[in-house]
Length: 211
Image (cartoon, rainbow, N blue to C red; front, top):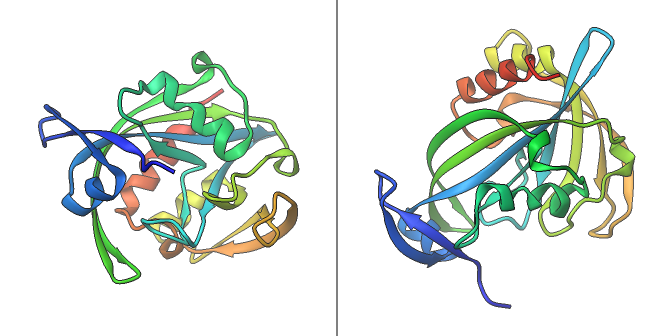
């Protein structure tokens, strides 16, 4: 299978051409990604969902992360990139249903299986109000190991340091199949993709305004 191609940019977002996924992460080219957080309200409480990245991912394997996210393929628009919702979670939505939460830049470095990576992303961030039950999601086995839901205010408190962990209900894939099992987990801030905790606090606070 041909490796993914990304449009790549310099630090001022001037186009530089295209590069493979491996080359982009090896050389630290800037590239664009799509982020979408799924949220819902139940009475006076707001909930947010997040995923567990598969252990085979080339960056941040086995970490909790944004509900659905992905790189823009070469020539792809943000509108087209919302395919990630359907591919990773089996959630169908129209672009007009997404709530824009702005744009962020991330410059992350790490190592996976002894191989260093530089991940420089410009991400368009969205929210989607979603009432689809966790058990009705269709997770993409190559990308997502599980999806969980927790109280929004408790997650904010965890990233701000006033809670050490948060209880989350979720579903996980069974042995790389498409079958789901319901689980309960206690999650901690250091189990999420390494970012400044303010990144999470800011986007989670923004979810309070979603209707």
